[in-house]
Length: 614
Image 1 (cartoon, rainbow, N blue to C red):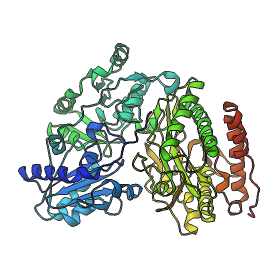
Image 2 (cartoon, rainbow, N blue to C red):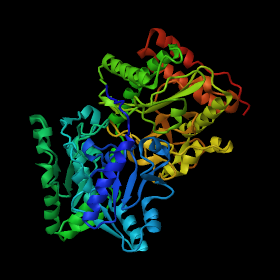
Image 3 (cartoon, rainbow, N blue to C red):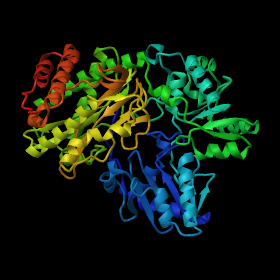
């Protein structure tokens, strides 16, 4: 079992631990301390040792910040977690603030008094974060104080040890390019950026560059560590070598000098003393690295992680692997949905569905000789009002029965050696209301709008995000999350820098994989989300057009529930897309299922009646 169902948060943790932190702050003459939900690598998942925000507050979401002052405490979360945070955090201790509308820099400017001293751990904040925080502190007359020791680590007496999962090699048949060739490309990029070296802090970049995978964090096959790449090819890798088998160590020795993590700071300082120009990504690299470089006479070159775009633009082997992974995963989801349709309402709860889905994914992987390595994130299994909690995490304390007349939202994914999947389907339990069907169809129109889009080179995610929302906007509705995130290749299911969102400033390039997942959430009642993964395809000329256009290839293969569709709200083109998609689903995953599932799939993918007038 990959997913734990223990309670996600414990409100009782807040009061005594906040009191201990305040006592420690008073002893070192600080007025407050910032606790981000982050580690030294700024990844979505953190190892248990680095779950400081959860330990202090009880909040288990993937994005959040706490600011603890002598007499007040605040926790900042975004729209995905506004409901979740109330159930996990002691509201007699913490005041909830918006991470979007009133982020810490804005809050500091308006709330910290003149002379206030606010501590922070420079390993847990990026260069860009600290730049913004310092500017706000200066406006209020306060001071940000970098600490040599994180106070949470001092008061957390049973803090777990650093993870030490084995490192494995990622075969060339799935990677599609030798590590030595990737590293040569990165060395050229370093030189173009005007640097002598770059520090890779993102474990996904290290995994991609060296063709390795690990298991140090949940649901993402990463080995935590750092790398210093050099324009002259003299690379260094800093990772606990107890993770390496003899074969892995021999392989990595051909690519870089291997060092223990304890030598990383000294190595950066030594390069800086030698006059190195060290590239750091402002949105990924820790402020501590800038302090080390500049404090030892080196020069910081502000430049994006050179592996991010090459990693995001998948090669043909990675694309072929993803297509295969999605066929396999689609067959598993079809088995699950068929099974779910046969169950009587009130006989299942949310955990039962998660457990069954893992079972069919494992079984399908075994049948196709491509085992399920892990789930790609904790499955969101939300019945009724729990489906309205956008990033709901089911626990034994919160699991609801699937009840007649409600909607059930299932957002899940798998990690396979050839690809990473992420799919959401919303299904009715019994008879849905007309409002549910209307809102579902509006969400579907937005998803089809993205699926069928043609767009010129240079288009950014921010420029197309509204297309997923137009139908909802016309009815006075919206959703409080981005339309799409990037997806890795047997790496992070949420991969940057590409995204479809108001904040999606990166150009969408051929080979990038993204999710397409508009939604609608009625607090206390139900949630709707439909999610497919899409691949940006190379630009092609449209007959009669002036410029070549990119498009999206849909990768995900599973039926969209027709019982929730009001066909009169769809155009003919939208109905045609849906029928064509369902025909493709049947053609590609039909041969992978049989018996009851095949019969169910044939019915689930049959064409809809065309009531559209447009």
